[in-house]
Amino acid sequence: MAWISSFWDWMDATFGKYAATVLFTNSFAALFAAGLLRLCGRLAVDRNTRFHNYLVFCLGALVGWALGMFFVPYGTEDKPIFEDISKLASVFFSGYALSKLDRFLEATMFDEKKPKAESWVRMGLFCATAMLAILVVVTNRLYFRPDGARALTFLPETVDAVTRRYPVDAITDAVYVGVLRSGAFVRSQ
Image (cartoon, rainbow, N blue to C red):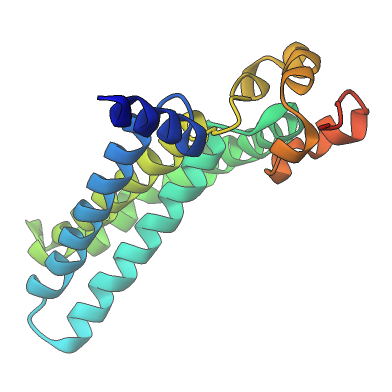
């Protein structure tokens, strides 16, 4: 039974306090991504359609990745940048893009008032891939913190307490550049 305790200590040191959440999410995300890739190939009638499905898969993953990073910024340095980006994006989407969405959907998703099955399948692939990428990015950015410094993401006033507890050698993530620049760290003995 001692090996279980040492195993969980290793898991905490490697993956952080929420090791089971990180491993579960990443494992099932890999399985779902493999299933979606297989579906991209199985739903295609020819080679050209298959590559279109793969392109939609990649676009969905990239959009989901960007949205996941947007929803969970690292530290206080990223927050103002993402707030500015969100203001610009909301102006664009609420003004121009939303006004064109109706015509775009009519032209691509329907053929003389009848739905195009292929277009709806691709929309489903895009949405499923984007949601999967958002889930993985958000989970990893929130919970994959082996050094225990998750508080830096939300509570900048705890920087001093975290840096006293963890020596410089334990801070390996580039996110902590601001902590290192502040000089509020201790050197390991």
